[in-house]
Image (cartoon, rainbow over all chains, first blue to last red; front, side, top):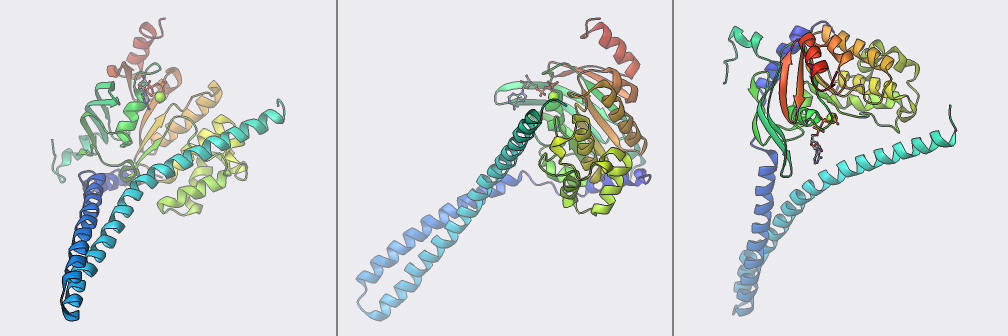
Length: 122
Length: 243
Ligand SMILES: Nc1ncnc2c1ncn2[C@@H]1O[C@H](COP(=O)(O)OP(=O)(O)OP(=O)(O)O)[C@@H](O)[C@H]1O
Ligand SMILES: [Mg+2]
């Protein structure tokens, strides 16, 4: 416990070397938005692809349109949805966790209280 | 504002300092420009009546709450808006108001939780039981069934487990008998002697003033007086204790 001057120096150094991000939640919001945009773009691509496939004359054309339109669109949608779910859930779950911890704590307090009362005055 | 790293002036930079901090809950302003320094190796006592904004000040200082305006400097660096975990991991440790323990876990399990920071359980237990022998006797007891004082000891032990450089303590004495409070402050004094800087928050002054190097009075979201414990004690008896 007596290497404290070192501890202060170490602490100062660690604070000094800390990377300061401008709010972690900011990047999260951006990725969330990216997810939404990707889903939107995916739907548009898929619809265009679908229309092209329907209007295509030959099987070859249909396949080409499937590849560029439908498949790419679906891939974008899936990726976008994954981003969206990941970052919206992250926010939600964080609050949820805190809430759970808090409630289980309150509950334990209540139980301890009840047991103490039930066991009579000491 | 940004001192260079290698300058010897580093010695004088307070480990923690608040500059014109304003904070609000929703649109209710609670802090109206708080200035406070915790120099290296000192115990600073922040005193004030209910609702003065002491706990809020602490929340802003440790990063749990964002300041609306003003700055929080840690070791001379502006850390306004940095998350509390980031600061805690590096050594700015807070022991919040009320019971900072898991009531449904035993003493030992509570200490196991503290290994989350990467320390070995054996080391944590050594420090904890060294400072608080009473916890050793009760290591298999469920924390929620211990006395308030013992729970507070456990909370402090967990705080110490993470090898703090600065310790922020909110109302250690809440709901405890004067004798227990004295015992706790005895430990605070020991901790301070080992070189850890401490900011303690209290409503009722007497016991803390014996331990503190610097004391400040907070009223209505502002620091109204700051000085040596003796000066503040006088101020207190003439001011808000009304006697
Ligand atoms: N979560 C919150 N939401 C809204 N207002 C709050 C919240 N927490 C505190 N306040 C208000 O902010 C003011 C300052 O509260 P704070 O907890 O900082 O006081 P304190 O000095 O720590 O008092 P005490 O000695 O009772 O702990 C009070 O008026 C309180 O009602
Ligand atoms: Mg408080």
